[in-house]
Length: 275
Ligand code: IPD
Ligand code: CA
Image (tube, rainbow, N blue to C red):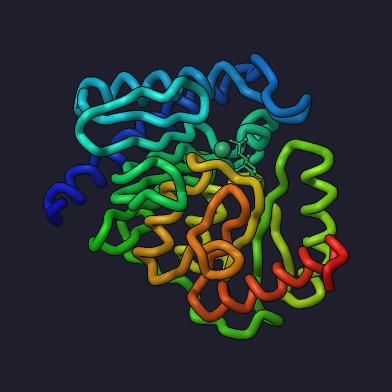
């Protein structure tokens, strides 16, 4: 893949995220209802999640009919080009439902098997209309917020790091995440729970946050954010420096992400009784 192709894919990711964001923002002016629930009663899908994903799928089929698609709200679509689009039509659906501003349309495209431990994310964009922002990056091109270059913060001391995290929708998973939270909070400046993993990752990239960690997130929550953080000079990994996955994702500048990994790791070990 040459630089021109990455740029072309990046420009399409921006256009898709922007158009999806405009549609969701327009629909948000009306009444938003829960259309269905997923992993638990607390895990909603609205008709707008589905409508935005359908729009994105249509646009990709028009522009790049041979690409595969992996989306939060639809079936996997196979392709022959070697590229897979990874879509989260609304990341932060609970925020969207309550009209809290931290939600975003996350669009990414990767090569390789479309799984966080195997893919290479080539380009990504996250539109957050209620925040008035759009972040984007493509491989080798740098990362941008509203067209301006961004960089992760240089903080190296965890004690003064502003960290974000998130929680899944299952009670058991949350109980474990809460115990890890309790083990981390004493080591950091503070912890934010904004409600959209995609937005959290973009905020680490632009320095609005210093670092992020969450267990149990899906490929579509992290795909665009991963390339945006990397292009902003940050690291995205799992607990032991392995690739990030559904098990755990940590992000920040390389020093702070490494320090956070140690604290999260020992909080996890302490709660499972092995330390
Ligand atoms: C959720 C958000 C949230 C994170 C959850 C995700 P959704 O995605 O990203 O911040 O904590 O793990 O499932 O359900 O709003 O698309
Ligand atoms: Ca999501």
